[in-house]
Image (tube, rainbow, N blue to C red; front, side, top):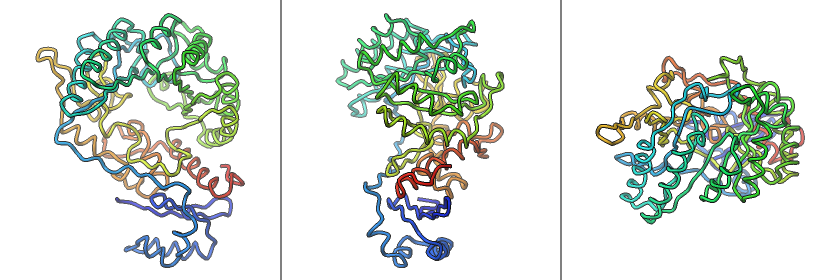
Length: 446
């Protein structure tokens, strides 16, 4: 394990010793801080030396739960994915002002040949390697249900193949919610129990940020979709994107969602200037206002039984990670044109990071996926420990370097350009969770 493992964090006159791998959060005083700082600066620092100087650390100040840190996966000689993400189309009902994929500008649909081949590939891998389950996710690129015929055929075929091979099937759907009641009924009757729907909050915010292709309103249709999926017993995650328009209204947005959809999970993320956001002039909302609003909204969310989450930080300080997402596995994402990519945001050769993330392609002549195993091995190496900035940061076990596609320089993938706004959000939220653990939220707001 490379990088710092023990940190001194200060906030409003309070000092905390934080050792996430040890599950330790300990308040220290100024004189103790100076002694600890000296120990940490020693070239041959070891945690045992720290314990000798402060024996009460291990005895009195452990987190209530044992810290879980995912062990490094054994590297297989070859790549055998048993999960696939299908981008069934680049088309979409909406023209969201911040869309990373600029969905709808291309009218490209996935063929049944590619969808079937991707499913056959992961089922074969699972069967040959003694796995017990397979996973299928519909995502975009575009709205996956837009290509309704291939969507239905792929879902049916996946279930047939997993059942026929004695495998447990897991199916997830990420959707814009522009669905008819008939479509929702079909989806839920075919065992799609995990659904992520994009709903950005109150009507005026949602309709401004997520207009239809003709500039119309989408709120009422999406609202009904969320209600319908919940009525059918689906596990719904509401995905809400915050722009400058809503960054000062985060608590209000969560109260609205709580009043209408109590008990759901809400994932809230700041908009990033990419994709269509560059054309519409979207700026990253204030990191300080996002963190402040998110912290205030957590108590509101709790009162409605809502689990409020953000990808770069977790209140579960005992849950440590080695990667931000599945890019370093890598993900097996198949685009409408048959490209294979590790990143949802990089789905075309025209993307500046295509040379890094796109590692394969469907070969219709030979009827197989041609994969670049050198690229796959390179993707596996992208973890937070590989970057010197991350190695020194106390949030690295939670954000794990954050989104690689957003952080990489499009000129040279070896140069990391962190989005300082997300870094500041990550730091503020993790710091809040640390101090909240000790002091119950008193005096720890950013």
